[in-house]
Length: 213
Image (cartoon, rainbow, N blue to C red; front, side, top):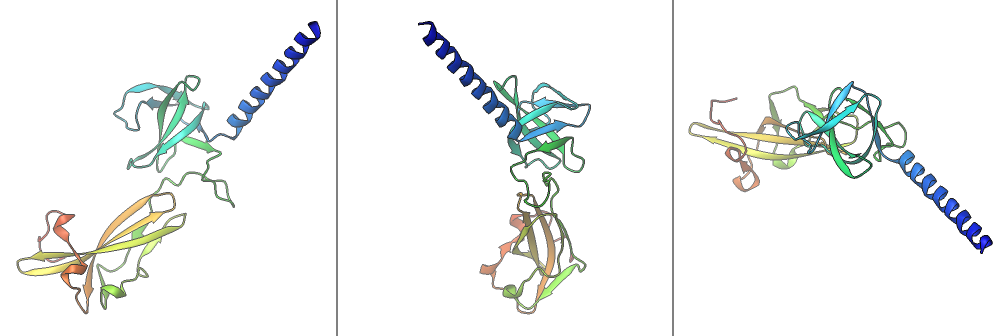
């Protein structure tokens, strides 16, 4: 009987050690953030107006369970709290991050990855983009700045006013982290498109027909 109890105790010790090591490995490999500011408020939801649950202080480490990118100013991390029983949200300013990331699952193969907070920057030199027809649109005239791969799509709109009409093109640039920038530019065609190929500008912009741009 004593031998059996001894075997059981050994098994329990080994099992406990295994669980402890497994938990440590999971924590070590988990996606985490390290607080760089003196403190950051922990919110119930990913918004600055949500209930405050507490404060994250400098050098504290939190395991990340989710992320929210749709805030214009902040990126929000959902983190585990109170021994994994609750979750809260910690924000990081897009241009000046409040946290340092560890083990982000979006890590690039060739460099240590830090979340791409910034939206693509889209510029063009001419006020009016001129092209032959709607099928000849390219994006060669755009100057796009972004640290990751991105995709450009566009929609053409028609602004119809009593004394003139003007076409506009809306560029949408989305990078591989779903950061998105939209920008409008006037567009002139040698062969104007039929109305079924364009959309009504008034559906997306107000205060149109304020004079030719």
